[in-house]
Length: 474
Image 1 (cartoon, one colour):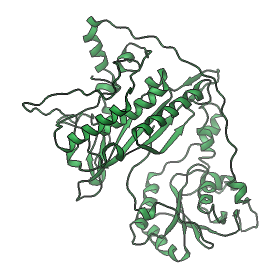
Image 2 (cartoon, one colour):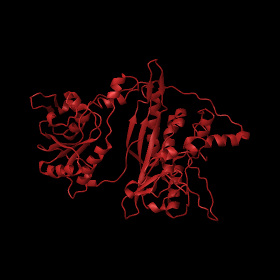
Image 3 (spheres, rainbow, N blue to C red):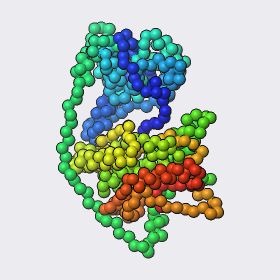
Image 4 (cartoon, rainbow, N blue to C red):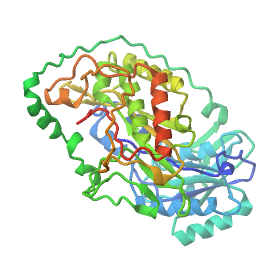
């Protein structure tokens, strides 16, 4: 799974303002229910480690309609001449406790539990304060600016609750009218420096069978590779999906006359008049990472970039930023060591490329446990999202061959590495992993290839293009 978004925001809205005594805390969104309790903790352990009731109770609710109503209010404030929101935080792990405490973490504040929305009257204070409902937002606003938010929330039918205020006493309080204070803590106790976590692990090498094949079976191999869903059939990517919401979708995943989902990247136009946009592309290599976590990280980054290269990016490679989504079965023998090697390899690679990784996520509980003691580990991988500002959305190149006399098909090797088959689709049809995976052997050469191809695309010299990654030339 990969979730996230890209976009541009005004610089004035990029930094939260410090709370001032008397600022009001507002909650937008739905009621509290007995769901999403301890979701963050449960998501960090292997499935099956806790009882079924605890795991089901940790599942968060999904209410996209409510999410849209709240988002409309926030958007209206951002598009206002003067944004009245001083600070904002979403309701995720930890519910109100996490969200509202983040708003007043430098001053202190009081939250009135009686004012919080409650959909189930049997909830305890712990459940009201701690449940995780994703369709809520917490805002910090000056008193004189609350009315425009209230009126906008009423217009959008987004529930609006005034639930507290900031102080200057450096304490976090959740209080009730009856005088009971479920939480009354010093901010230094709540936000104090957490102890460093030290993980000790052993290096555990995996040994896979080598790939052997016979050249006279080439046609059989080709037929088998083309039957893989990930190679020649991607209907599951496109069925029941509206791919043109908002009218600013400049490049979606389907290409050609029969609309095959083969496009390497997606592009959203920034507006309805200009030619600039935002391009984004993905890369991952879970099978290759089994053989070498270092190579798996480099291949994930490389694939995201060779997917993104088909649109002219502002400043070429320098204009690219990455998001790294780590999916790993940590806390199993050898896996923490492999994760460390993978993270270090990705860090070294992007530093050599001269690009950054300003954001990301980790899901380090990719383990399924059963009552009989069996465990199933998902292959550790990093899913890399590359994004950059597209200079001209009209110049983006699609993987659709243009029948033009005098044109040629050119194969460009970005990697300067051998033709290794480990972790490939070909290895998959043979029910093997392999022993040696492709890699990027020359980082400077990779950069030169990327930037050169970008310049050719800007000049309109490239008619069609497609990357060669985990499915190779097939």
